[in-house]
Amino acid sequence: MGKHLFRSSPPQEKQQPHQTLAETALQECMSDITTVISKWTSSSSNEFLFSTNSRREAEEFVEAVRRLHSTMHRLVAVNPSSDKLIYAQNLMQSAMNLLESEFQRVLKENKQYLDPESVSLRSCRSSRKFSTSTVTSISDSEDEYEENASAEEHRFSGGDSDAMDDLKMIADCMISTGYAKECVKVYKTVRRSIVDETLHNLAVEKLTLHQIQKMDWEILEPKIKSWLRAAKLAVRSLFFGERILADHVFSSSTNIVEASFTDITQEGALTLFTFPEHAAKIKKLSPEKMFRFLDMYESLANLFVEIESIFYFDSAAAVRSQVINSLAKLGDAVRFMMTDFETAIQKETSKTLIVGGGVHPLTRYVMNYLSFLADYNESISVIFENWQLTVPSPLPESLFGSGGDDARPEDLFTSPVSLRIAWVILLTLCKIDGKAQPYKDVAMSYLFLANNLQYVVVKVRSSSLKALLGEDWVARHEGKVRQYAEKFEKLAWGKVLTSLPENPSEEITPEEARALFARFNDEFEAAYRKQISWVIPDPKLRDQIKISLSQKLMAVCTEFYEVNRFGLGGGTFNVRYTPEDIGNYLSDLYFGSRGSGSVSTKGSGSGSGSGSTTTGKSWGGRSH
Image 1: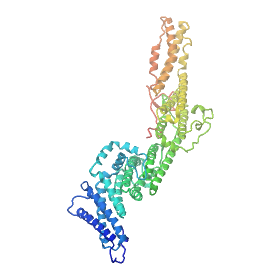
Image 2: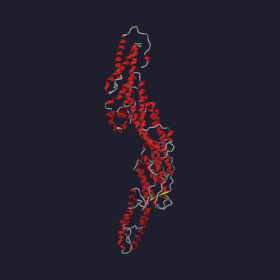
Image 3: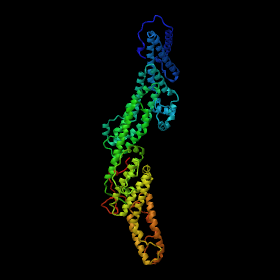
């Protein structure tokens, strides 16, 4: 209430009845208030007005202050020169001083009950809603804090549980009597210090773009991890709790809620939400860093609805805009790193042969990378949505799938993410196809192709990639694996299979039988010795090839052996590999028992030998 209420006016010659009534009512209010002020401001008082033991007296005091304010207005209307108005104004100031002091004390002494997490939990448990806006995803917060909710609810069940209501009572009184500015000033000072302290404890730092760009990745990555934790807690606990508290304490004025909440939280929120944008502008954005940026993108995207609901005020537009800008810059960074990843695959020029025809490190790296990437399906769907893929034409049908010699990946996929993933796999398979050419043993080159494509198919089928590429893609490439396996069998075991007669039950002379057995023994031994160091890492593919070989080889071999072994007479001919021996030998194959790794193209044609050579840092291990 300001001094404008008290204007000079000529003294009244005679008081009117309504003047007397107003002054009498004013005197009664002043007497009640004076008694309370004297009691609670005396040096001997060890208690406080707004406490559990004095709750009723506090409510009566607030009501008396309201009556005093109302009565002063009535008296001003009928007798603005009344001497009692000066005393009433001084008393009102004393009452406001007491309320302001109590307001500050309640705020400070109940920090543990008014911390944002407790407030937000209390709101979730009691289903309180914003007075002007509803956070639509509170269920997420409630789930996250469910374990602590019971304890928090107990803390609010008595004693200082009325702190929020006390603050609201004081604020309503001070606002309605013209002292909103003093009340809000105290509130903002105390609550801003709590927000700043909480953000500091969450390791939120105010870093400039220049500071972040100078950081080594070993320093920046831990800061990103800290940010991921801080962002979730800040939005769902800190900022949400502050909105709940401001909405409750200043429920009588939306304008005050907006002004106080924005002033308290905006600086900290901008510091928090600017970090991803600065991080996304670092100069060395190599592909292995992508997943940290996707983590930040996903975190912001998941929190965006809540951020909009909490910071919906016009005065908080800068916060919302910063989140949008950070999402955009993170998306740019992800697209840049994806392009760099594709370029790295195209430029991969290692000249090594994998011992035993196993899986190439390039295949492992790319598929591990893509399987991690597919776990961010929702995020990359948005990031890649309008990103045009430029590919050469035509593409060989043998490498991509059905659709004719002019088949293009964009003809087979409608989702930009699926198209991009399929294209990267195609790039990899083209590289693998080229790396099969240097094998001098054609059978091993087909085994190499089968192993690598099988690794791709298994990785797709066992990860989120399957949902992106579809069952048809998997089926087509599984068929391609079978084709490679069949060609491998034919080339690796063709001479063994043709060394036996087409009709094993046909009668032949002992000499012919000896010759066929000798030829079979030589071919089988040569094939076995060559392939003992070859490897089929995937157990399913290994079993399929062994079963296929066994079915084709054992039936003929067993029948021929049973028909002709007694016709060999007592000569010196020795059957080195009986059907039982052959089965045992086949069971030992393709585990790479005599060496693994890779050798230079200067080595033997079959890839035999020992030692290994890495293909360079780009394909050396996990990317995440």
